[in-house]
Length: 375
Image 1 (tube, helix red, strand yellow):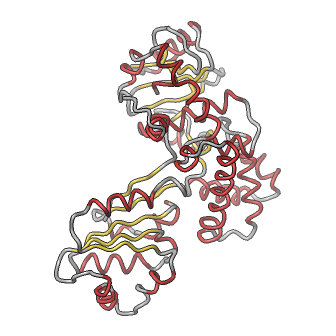
Image 2: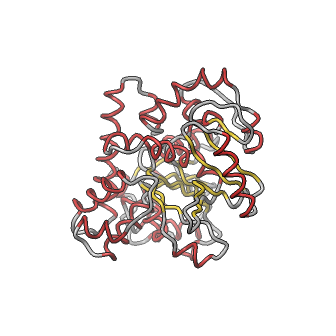
């Protein structure tokens, strides 16, 4: 089974329909569980009758079938049905939902080895350019990204990056040209998150408190979480703060990264830093330092490289991002200078990292500097 999840309005339904159209078999069906008529197909107590219910929709039970089900969180009991049909019939499922918080509970370990989960996020800058019809080949290796630094390419694309930083990477927002319409779309996405994900998935008594927490966290992007301050500001208990943070992380609204340590226990227990899923939300609902906003945008462009940490010594020396799986450290600067490069290199070598680079918002032509355009 293929399970597609991610933040609302990141293109999951569009992607599912693209895959649906590419499957040459005619023995296929696309169902949307936000539609109560499609939900009704799964109301049978005898799951074998559900399979028969698909016959009038063109599904031949004697051939391999392809069943696409969108918005599966709208019908919680669907997991039992899917598992039964998968085990008893020749069927391949493609499923989508907007919350790992829900999906991890929906598909238990009994389905281990029978499912693969893909996560979809708002567009990174490379994808942003593709949506704007500006194809640019981005290297997967950081050492190559450094070599690709080019002033003329930077000048050509810097206004695109400015727009990416201001309005983020939700596909429909990227495709819209009018700034007022972009802001309206971002508000609609935020409202849809509350109406569809928060109200349907969460069992929180005070939804307004969760909203207030989101607004507080947007003010704190790039900063360390202070659970006590959040608890005090919202007048809720620390356990409640932790439960809200878990929900916000697993519904993809925020990411929380841990400090790098070779001691796993110390890493897990360390104070985490917070980043929003999209800088468009940050600009719309908060006033933050432009350096922190830029740092958030960089995070959103590197998270697909794997695990991301940060590093801070007790003396205060810090590295913005560590990519331990790639043996790479990154420092984020509005305009890198030679001191930034030397400082990062010295600290990274002491930690044993093979590569270190300063990511610069403005163009500078130094070694060990990556232009944000190439990230």
